Length: 229
Ligand code: DX5
Ligand code: ZN
Image 1 (cartoon, protein in one colour):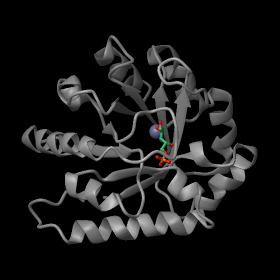
Image 2 (cartoon, protein in one colour):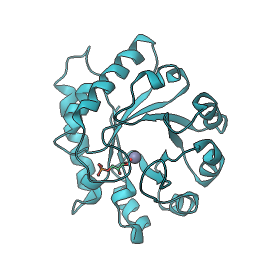
Image 3 (tube, helix red, strand yellow):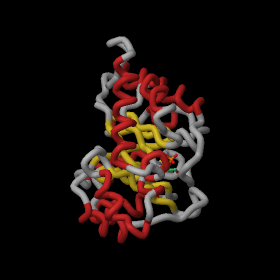
Image 4 (cartoon, rainbow, N blue to C red):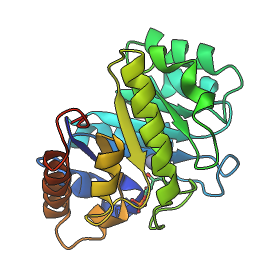
């Protein structure tokens, strides 16, 4: 299933609730980028803002933690309304325990890898996650161009997931536009984060529709054995 997850990183933070309402009828999730100024260069938002915008929509909150020691903040983000929490393999020493901790809260768990991190970093935890996030830019900023080579890792994860008989989402994040989403679909992704493409558009809702239509068209052009969505 194609899921479009607009990243509010590119939304107008002064009118966050309004911006979220603007995509609520079109999107599948709201992607919330949490940055600590240490794991990544930027600092964004945390639990209080997440709690506040929870009232703006019924869409699931896809919380992407770009922070070191994410295990310290799982409970508070779950309390703030996260439906899925994704942690970076590079940022949590005891990744297995951190993922257990997320699931113990009764919410979905995701694991992310940066462009330079190999797939083997997540291979041994695939059975305990609901989603793998492959970064297609170096995390920290919106509006960057996609690092196309990262899509080969999406292909590798797609193969691994099939081989292991698992059922999980494969999310791509960074540089997703109507021009790049097709390649991500062909690599095997089914969840697409888009920040600047959506919130930089005159009509963010229409931009979400375009991404969905383009992704579905790309999937249709694949053979049924290749298709993941
Ligand atoms: C980058 C964030 C992304 C970002 C994507 O570190 O994880 O979610 O918002 O922005 P675009 O879609 O503009 O590349
Ligand atoms: Zn993100």
